[in-house]
Image (cartoon, rainbow, N blue to C red; front, side):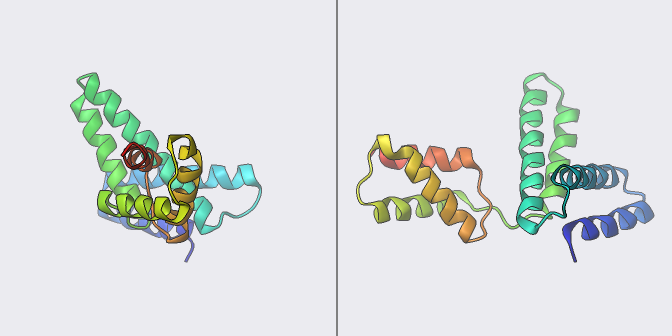
Length: 151
């Protein structure tokens, strides 16, 4: 079952359960996926669908940060709830320890890279996580790479 089909099925379930928050989030996700499909003029594969969902999560995280800074906690909570609904459709995110271990492994494979090689290390690390089917935040990986290369 494709991601769009699964979301449509969950929209129906949310309607029947009268779960307004979940319903609005699922509709927003479906709209984003359909818009991407229209832009591409072809069906999305799983990787592209996951990329759209990751973008939505990143936008929500930025919103949570801004709402918290602005003292709008109820809006920040709403965005955080949307993140948890969207994350249910993505593979499990890698933890901090997994990211650090992956970065150390990439650095070990490359020999002894310096800070100048950070771009190459980042590229290799992100490719390794993608090959393993792990979802990672680029900022967290970047921080881990900087930490390891500065040792």
